[in-house]
Image (cartoon, rainbow over all chains, first blue to last red; front, top):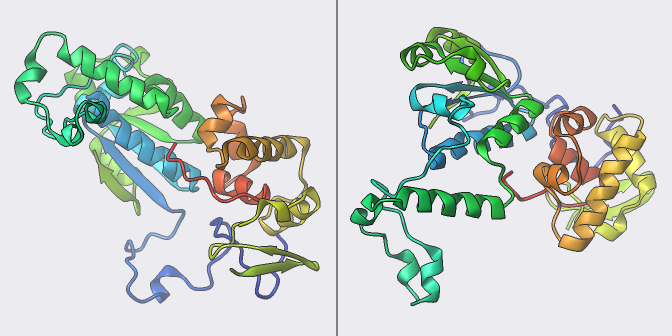
Length: 202
Length: 105
């Protein structure tokens, strides 16, 4: 690698040695004795469409930043990597008080910030409507659907695992797992793998 | 605005080091920058990516994200990670003389 000329500002691409080790810099958090590549651990525990995206988007961003990413799918989060369910994840208005529609602002200014009455979410077919609406909004932003997103994560080098306990509890079979999933592992296995990682729980 | 000098070539960058003016870039400079970021020889595959970034951003006004390279450019994500290891999106936009992409996916 060519030397950086005097006074040249090069963006940090993470592959040059820093002038000091992290522990030398005052005020910086350290992760105990771990010294290795930066790692991110994400635990996806929810199976609603709107809760599937945050973990995947965060993980994808970390991968493109050169961070080693490990994702553990547990409890309802297993639906994200189950091929029988992951193209049918749903979004419900129920229990979501932040449910408001930007389009309503066209009817009357201010209406876009008004939260929908919870009872509307109970109307038959409303979950389907809300799901279709969210899918369209994501597609407009070129965000992939969940199965495609998993392909993308796999191609980008994400390490993905299914939780052994939930897998057994839901009586899943390995053939139903997305091919990017490396294995069905225990919580303890995952904890071992993510030594030194920063952790996000979704 | 800081100015970088590389082998007598001057170009303006922001505080992070990314180009602020796409017109101050050319392919000759890209070869030299590639050596700085540790890419070594630039292959035809690298150039294909950089050319797409230049052309697409000239139309849209923003640096394409990796996702856009996949959907609009037809590139394979795994290949992009191999070609520009580490921080692919940032590295390729730097070598194309563009600001870093702002999109999330």
